[in-house]
Image (cartoon, rainbow, N blue to C red; front, side, top):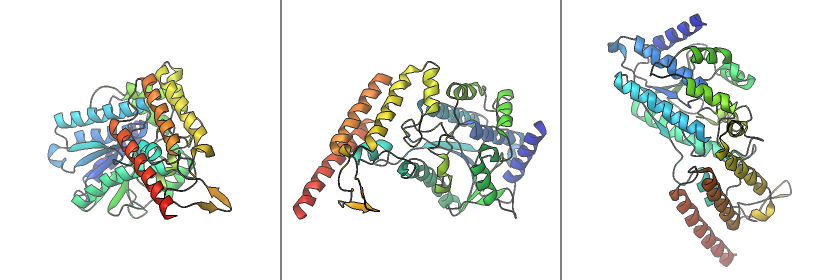
Length: 366
């Protein structure tokens, strides 16, 4: 196994020093096992290079949907801070930040404010707004500043058959290390750990301390308690199927696409009982979604629409949105966690007022 990781470090070093040196690197960092392994190997490789050769900037980009599984969000933020603090002390060209959904596009802005029905497999509006847009905006900023960027991703063929097929489909034969991104012009993808197995990931993390200090024990315990897989940073619709599936269980605690949140249930089972209200709230959201008494007759555009002879219900009624907010605030109180901000509550209530006024105007002109 050591030989495999030595080869990966060599590949990372060669690519770092290659002709693309004027292209900054962006590491998609979720804090899960795969992105942590990638960060570990890149950090080590950089430390092994002579100081005069550490010229290419490296940016860590993490994404917080604001409805992340709470222990996972906490671990990601702590890990990123540890990496950035160590990089600063060691004078490494590493910086980074966590990106969030835009104001007016958070989960609660859209669900409670505008009445969007909770996501399901055929209507996953959440992935684009909460994951793809914030991360893509960060990457586009770096492309605008530098012309091109290289995105390092901790994806592996061993994750799933779909992931293996996707990687092989876009493999660049001419330059096997770099693959053009399918939707972000000016971005290339570099997948250093693509051939590493899941067992090798865990063996490495459990036997090697991170080069930024400490151990990987917090990460290992996180997985042990939850029994979950990670929900990776998503930067294109093509990668979206990995979000909101039972195979990616470290995701949003409000995810109504999956049948059961195994990771959050795992935390409850290991003694974190304050997460039980979150599970109960999520189940209530699922029950409300397809109940016609909670849905408006018209779509948000004011139209009554049909598809294949079936009426397409509109957003949640304002009464339903108020009910969801009341339930959420009660869940927040019971769990002791901050689940919605005051700014989001204000946005929601202002949106309700606008919707009432728009509805009155539509009735006048009807």
